[in-house]
Image 1: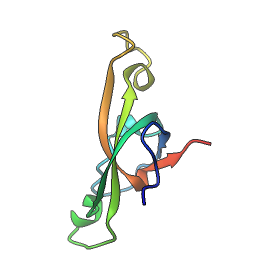
Image 2: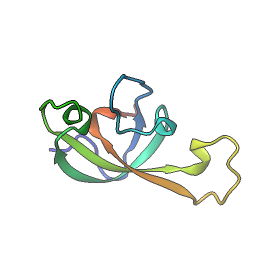
Image 3: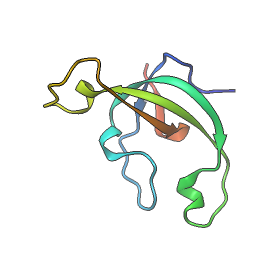
Image 4: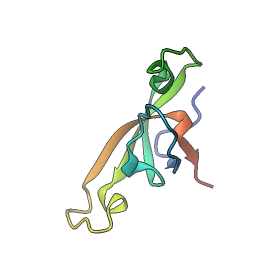
Length: 93
């Protein structure tokens, strides 16, 4: 069962934990739109330390460029798509 659906708006956690992190800094604290669910995968943030943990869902999320950078002056349709682990995403109320 997926936690988020295609078309749903989500917020990327604004967190800066130590160690290997797969979520780009420039996306933290930003909102985007879920495009699709890829499935569950080993959590690379844990595996990189030689550990094994529960598998995590991975989603493709689209972010409008104008929402990422205050000084962005390109076309409004420009976007960035990123594959993000579920534990980095929060529902927007």
